[in-house]
Image 1 (cartoon, rainbow, N blue to C red):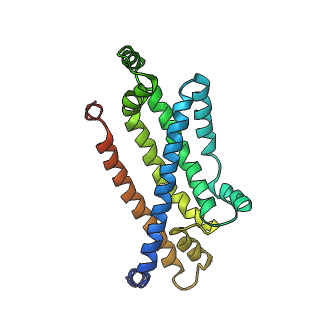
Image 2: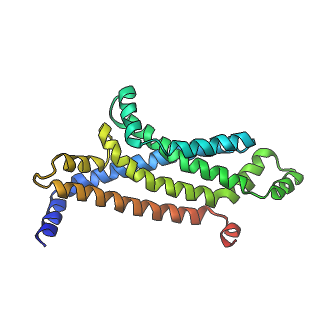
Image 3: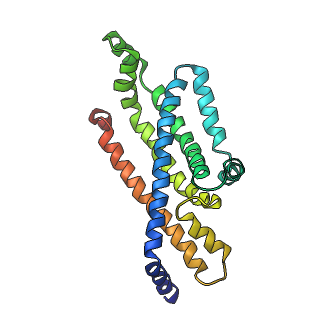
Length: 220
């Protein structure tokens, strides 16, 4: 009970700092996720135009996820220095991969007969893509976005290695002082904060998916 009491005292004394770091963490993840989603949509659409493009996209997304985020961040630090920039690059890269895979899967899963029917009604390539293919593939695409968001919450913590913003700094600080005063509280506070942010973001994305999915698709 004493440990729990000390932990809540620790949180209360540092609430303003923790809440600001939580805001930074969420902001970093959301902005990187938006960039990754836009990039994945554009490249995913281009990739699905040919069979070899689909193969390249799927292979790249699978191989890319095997790269250790810590190693990639360390490499970027040597190229672009420390701070926000390497953190954003790493998050966009890893966020891009699962979304790209789901964009390809979603678009390739659209019934070709529906596309041909749309073309027969006089719809152009862009109109068919925007009004038919993407809406039909949207639930699959958003699943990729949600998976990416959860992954980026953890990757953003590692970004503290490059002095990136967010709660990761509290975790690294606690680990470096392990055995010292409040070291464990620092690690636990940072970890629980990231878990809470991940839950909040997933709820928001789930609600966004429901609101932006066509009612006809949602009932299927």
